[in-house]
Amino acid sequence: MPATKKVGVSDIAKHAGVSIGTVSNYLNYPERVSDTLKAKISASIAELGYVPRRAMPVSAASSSPSTPLVGYVMTDIEHSLFTSIFEGIQEVCEDNGMQVIGVNAFSDLERQHELVRLFTQMPDVVGIMLATVQDPTEDIAIADAADKPIILLDHTSPIGENTACSVQENNATCGRLAAEELIRSGCRRLAFVAHSFDYEAIQDRYLGMQQAVMRTGGDATLTVIDSGGLTFDDGMEVGKRLAVEINKARGKTSSNTSDDPTTLPNNGDLPPDGIVAGSDQLAIGLSLGLTDEGLCSIPADVSVIGTENVRNESVGNTAITVVAAPGADMGRKAMMTMLDEINNPSHIHGSTMLDPTLIRRASTRR
Image 1 (cartoon, rainbow, N blue to C red):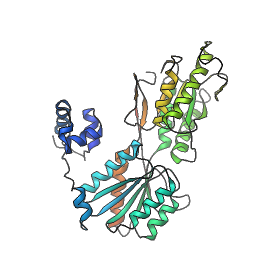
Image 2: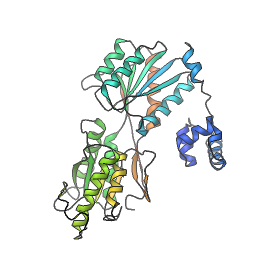
Image 3: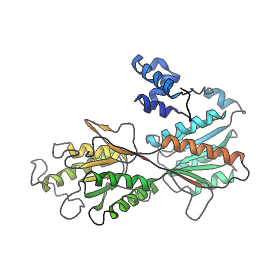
Image 4: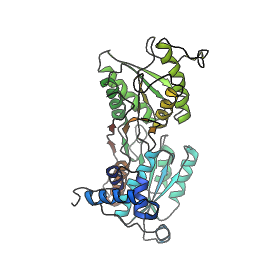
């Protein structure tokens, strides 16, 4: 049946129950995909009416001045949100006879500035996409000086200015959905485990949680646990310490942890029974740390929710409930905005918010 709306690689992956990378391999390197997965992907393509895009070879794109290029600077390529955004950008580019070049800033602000500057010096680059968690003021100035449009992803324009368009996830909704899910399932002592509150996404997720907790009229409480970072290891460390607190609250002791003097922030005298992690890597580490020595059970003792939907969200036998970011849709919207800015002399800068989606899994109570 023909598709009634644009169908992308991410739609095929979701329908077939495989990763985006597997679908990409099916389309471009079929010898890398097993016959079983080929059958599933082929069936999904037929059912959804997907028409594979025929991309121009990179060598041809880079050598031909008739092929406009878009430069995409990612904060950190290991973060799957940014790679999902890349997919959305690429889909729209290929539909419009363009190509995208992606580069990794490794969360280094100075490197980010240099990469933006590099793209402004490439004559075939007609616009720049910037996925950043840090202040983009200098990057916008670099692009403006070169008279090249720049679109911000996962970040708004600098406060008080309207110098660039932006496309981002509604992170306040992300935090609200996560908190509401915990409250709905019976959790009342909520905690937000995060770090880097100068990041917009972290600030907004916490704000959304606050809004949900306030609506309970005091029936639920919220505290913040500073994880010291947003990585797997940071979550693991916090999870192990929280496991001790939860175990003590049940009146139990552990020979391995009875001398641990660590006391984490909590509501009243009890540790949290529901946790929202500022990143999925934190959520994964938390889950392993909480259950590492058998001190805690997820979700019986504590529920855990991630806030991104990375592609390795399953930890052991625990699949983590997440609020999934609309990464590919953000990329598509950003690229359509870029095309309008390039082709429309009366283009006006603006900000677009896309809502995330709750995906309920085993780490929260039914």
